[in-house]
Structures are given as structure tokens and as C-alpha cells.
Length: 242
Image 1 (cartoon, rainbow, N blue to C red):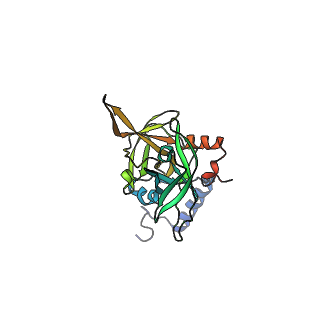
Image 2: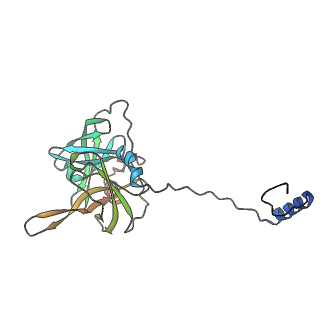
């Protein structure tokens, strides 16, 4: 049989055209709507280069930790990393020893964060990858999260875990964290910066505290913004400039 191979029986062309016209006249118009396309969730393999490009090493006195580029001129880290210092040095991807001043900070008990202002000129040819935040996103227990930083002051490392509990001050997770990752960024699986790594859990055996690497805490980005709002300093984040 000649013609369309999808047809199961032959229809004369005049009859076929009549059938098509009848079907078209009986179909209701389709309402067209536009939908905002959401980014597909990242896996830990996707995250490596993307997060590494916006993560910096922070050094202040004898203390070292990690931080996140939140603007071309500002870095987010943990307060306890720079506590007692007015200046810090950061190592960018491609440049080290960049001098920063401590712009503002929270406190250890509730909002463990600090904002560093980059004072040195960034060498030519270095492009800064700035983290994106989403203040409207809701976080529920069981949500997948990622921790970024430089454990023990070594190479960049990315770990993943689940959000295990939520409080007014700190969010607890199962993501493993080590010394040197404090101040690093916490990300959701869409690539948004959702907080800053604060500390790991500890267990006291009666003589001394033992760190629990899979029991870690971070400060949610909403708490940081709330504290910055009271200081009129939300401009430190890209997209919230004056």
C-alpha cells in the first residue's frame, strides 16, 4: 500500500481532507501559558568547578578557614575564623595573599558570620565567580545540602549530607566537616548559597571533647541577612547593592 506508513487503512484523499477538517473544527482552542523553567538539581559531580570558583581560603593571624565570594568586593566567612582580627588574607582561585578588612560580623552564639572587604586590587585576568542566594527558598528536614571549603588548609573539598534539624540559630546537618572548612559556603542542590559553615558537633567523654565530623552546623543565609538588614549592610551581597 502506498502512502503514509502510519495509516492502517487506505482513505481516499478527498475523504481524508474532510476528516481532517471535521477534527480541526471540533477541537477547542488551546490556552498558551508561559512557565519559568527551574534549573535541574546538581549532583556533587556537577558542583566541583562551579563552587570551587567562588570559594576562597581565609587566613587571619594563626587561624585559617574558608569563605565565599558574594560580591566582587566582599567575602562571606564565619566570625570565629577572623575573631580578634581587623584584617585577613584570602587566596582566590589564581591569586593568593589578597588583603581584606573585616567589614562587619555577627556573634558566636547566634549568627556566626563575618563580611570581609577586599582591599587589594585583583590581578588582571582573574574572573570572580559570585555566589547566588535565594532568600525565598524553604528548607525542610531531609533536604540535600553541600558543604564547600579547604579542610586542614589543603585542597578544595566538597561534601554532601542532609539537613537533620532546624532551630532559630543554627541548622544541623549530616554533612561531614573538618577544621579549615569553617566559614565555607553551604549550598542547596540548585546551586544557591544557603548559609555559612559554623562548627562541627562535639561529644564530651568526661575528660575532653571529641569532634563529631558527621554532626555539623551552619548559619542560614536568612539569619545573616536579618542581621545585616539591622546594620543597613545588605549591599555586600551582589544584587542587593545600594
